[in-house]
Length: 308
Image 1: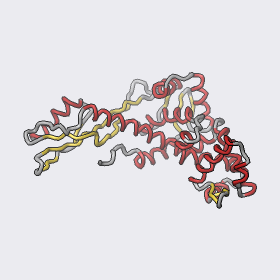
Image 2 (image 1 turned 180 degrees about the horizontal axis):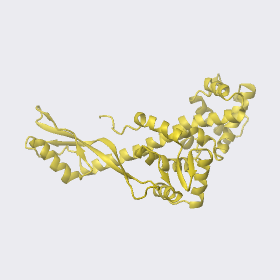
Image 3 (image 1 turned 45 degrees about the vertical axis):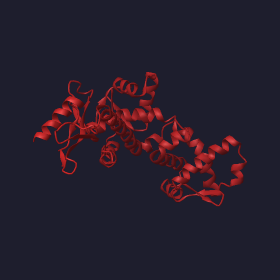
Image 4 (image 1 turned 90 degrees about the horizontal axis):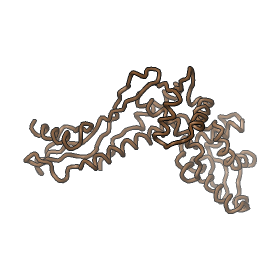
């Protein structure tokens, strides 16, 4: 069809060969042909066990813009510009990174909660959980007896826990919520396991609030490094085997230069909590965790923006 040929020529010359388009539709009232811009964006993934081979996968990115041709088959001013198309593509790639990290956090929250660095966060919620375990209540008078700084901090934690049904308000006081009692039952009275289960639930469901609102950042390098491994693994949809230098270089590419000594320490800590595995000089994924991530991928990682 002549209109499709015209659109194809315009896409190639104006947007480049990474952009494709949907079948054109005609509006007889406006006498306009419209086609949606999209991209099957290539990802080239390596595996250090087979360095000569490259895994080629594609991310399907939809609704990057529109081409609109008039009745003379010339592009109209309302056609999406190349700059806007590139901005939309970049935004969707950023969205993929964010959603992939969310999948990885949701699945590996139990492992992350067992890290040594997580103990500092456990200590911060310990005052709340210990009081509720021993006397079922944190009173407003007790909160007011704290210093202003401690008071602000405990109120932020209480608000976070309240949003997860771990605590609930009783008049001006606080008592335990339904999920608090459920996790206590699941951990069979083991206080340390119970506190770790609470932290795991917070990481799984409110990590961004923990990081942005309460300013807890000590887990970020661990989550970022875990994502550096699992995000390309999710793209490849298979377990990858990488040496430490490959992971270190990838981490520095996305998150800036860091001490390689520190990164190797983080890798070993992730192995210690079984977020990653290590054997014969290769780091590779926990198959049980990776299987759960793959199950979540189609539910969370749709990269087609909603229509305006």
